[in-house]
Image 1 (spheres, one colour):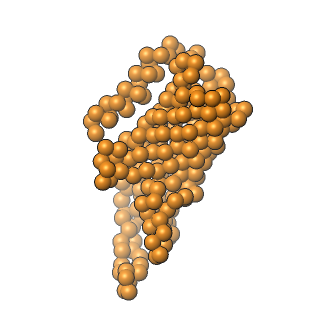
Image 2 (image 1 turned 30 degrees about the vertical axis):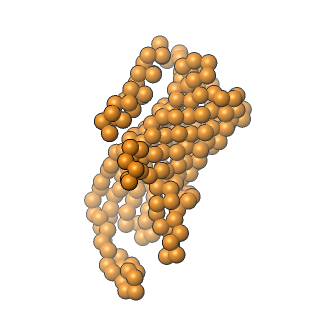
Image 3 (image 1 turned 45 degrees about the vertical axis):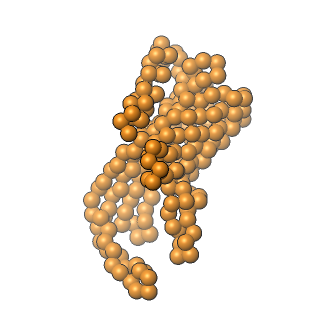
Length: 197
């Protein structure tokens, strides 16, 4: 994990500071909206055993375009998965991504992206309890009454299709990439608008 963290820091800072001479090298910026699915195929969604494949969790974000060469760009960005509430609004969940991708221009209309994120999950509990089915009986379960945050470092891959100043992107986030037993994948679908500076 320490090696992966060092590689992350290296990606975030060395590429930017080694290649960029000043703000004149930033050639554009972007805004994106989309949807985020957390822990793909890991969460049971009903009593028949169906698991999550797609969830509509709205995402907003912004980023910069920093050219490194003719075919390579550094794309730092920030994304916020808008607050999610459980059924009776006793738990509020926010996810924030601080990301950086290296993008390779495979075609004028296709970018391949690889990078890393710091994913911050914040959960705020309002306390209380609920009664849920538990086999053939019911049980009481308690909601947390505290605020907790966790920070994860993810390995990210993306595929971005561009048309004029718009794009559609599939972005994946791999948690615990070096621990197979606890590895999880999440993904986002983005619609992005690019502007030149």
